[in-house]
Structures are given as C-alpha cells and as structure tokens.
Length: 351
Image (cartoon, rainbow, N blue to C red; front, side):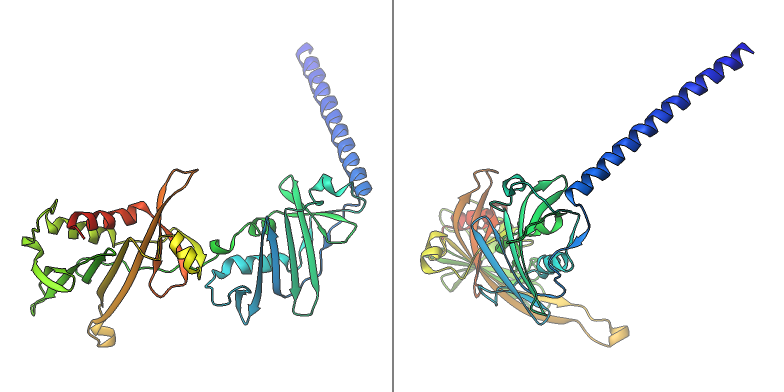
C-alpha cells in the first residue's frame, strides 16, 4: 500500500509539472499573438506582379537590367551576350506573386531594418504594365526585410530572391567550351609564341595508323620519334604527350569581360598573347547498322585559344591566366593546371 501511495504522489507531481508547462506555453503563445497583432503581422502579396517581362536590380555599385525576348531573357547592355537562363527565370519566378512572410504596418526607423540604405533594389515590370520597386535590407532570421519604395510598411520576405540578386553579370554567362581531344582524334596541334610557331603534324596512313612530325614555321621536319633539335630538354614524344594530356579536359574557370576594348585586351595580355594554341581534330561517331543502316560519321573541327597574362588571387593564392577563344567576345580565366603544361611545352621546344 505504501508503494502504491508513493507512485500516486509521483504521478500527481508529474501532472502538476505538465500543467505548469502547458500554462507557460499558453502564456508565450498569447504574448506572441499580442506582439503579432501590435506589429500588424499579416500575409500579403507584394506588388501584384503576374508575368515579369523586364527587371533591373542594384547590388553594391553595379546595376543590371534584363528584358524578356520571347522565351529568352537578355541583358539590356548587350542582347547578344549568352546567358544561363536559370538565374533569370528564378528571379522572375520569385517576383511573380511575391508574398510577405509578415508585414510590419508601423515600422521603426528604416535604419533599423537596413532599408535607409538598402543592400538591393529590384525594379520589375510585368506584361500588364504593373511595376514594382522593391527595396531589400538586412536579415531577419532566415528572411530579409523589404519594402516598396515610397511605401509605409515593412515586410519580411524569404531570402531566396535576395540571394539571386547577389549574382553578378559574368556569373550568368554561358561560357564557351573547347572540344577535348585524344591523340587518335587530334590531327594537328600548333603552339605559337609571338616569334615562332611549332606544330605537331599527324600523317595518317592508308591503314589508319599515323606518325607525328615536327613542323616549324610551316615547314615539315623530322618524325617526332627522332626529332631532337639542339637544346631540347626532353624527347619530343614526351612533349607531345604533355600537350595532349592538357588538351583532354580544358575548361574556362570564370568569365571576366565582354567585348573588351584594346586597352583592356592589352591589360589581360591578350593583345599580343604569350601563347596561341590551335587544335585541329576529327571526331568519329559510330552508326548503328542494325537499326539505321549507317556507317560511322566523321566530323572535323578546329579551335584557337589565346593565353594571356598570369594573375594571382590574393585570397586563395591560386594562379590563373587570362584566356580567350578566337572569334569569341568573352575573356576568361583558366586554371594554371590547364595552361602551364602548354607554356612549358613552348619553353621546352624553344619556340
């Protein structure tokens, strides 16, 4: 009997604790509800944008403007600039029917929300002529403060839209690509300095086998296997392997300029490139005779890459080089690991 009594006492104590906790939670919820009512927190659609067709935004000192051309978003400063559409369609989707997480109808000083000098400003127009000028300020937990320019209410909005507005123009560029080639696919590789040109020139025999030759300033020389000019630090075959390995997976790391003027090209070391690489290749695509009754098809291709000045990233301490493809309007950077094997080959063969 005494044990049962003790259990009842413990149970009663637990119920008292639970009741107290429930009372505290109720008081907190009630206080939050009063605070929400005092701040005027209600769900609201901001601006009423339905189908965005034009928008611009400021981030720091830069201002970018885009417009919808059919189904394609274009940069107003250069409609031909190739852009990755996903960045722009996401901004348009976020603005369409933009909803407030909460609304503060009687805000404090705008400086309290980072809206006196907003971090971002987004101006949008939709197909019906409706416009929205949205100012975006400081963080509010996982959200951001925002308000309509000239308005009296402050909102909090999800952080997704402001996050997209931190994207710079060149981060949106659809970068050029270079065809990766194997030794079987390569037909000719020319490495040029401002003074000389050296070409690895492939001679393909009737049976499909091939031999590489050294071609200097347009004149065919010895086979690579026996090419040993004075001062060559390593066999020419090793140099060719080094170059081919570098050409397998070359990529541009970042776009840094569009249609640069002569002064900018010279500043990037691309007015007179330190190295010019021309690659000619043939790609073979096997057909399916059983299904299509087709033999394999061969496609010839070619590209010329200009390599310019070296630059160092002060933060990452990584080395890269300015680069540009012939016929392109875009200047890029390339990782040292993609460029230096080509520069080393130039030095080794004495071009």
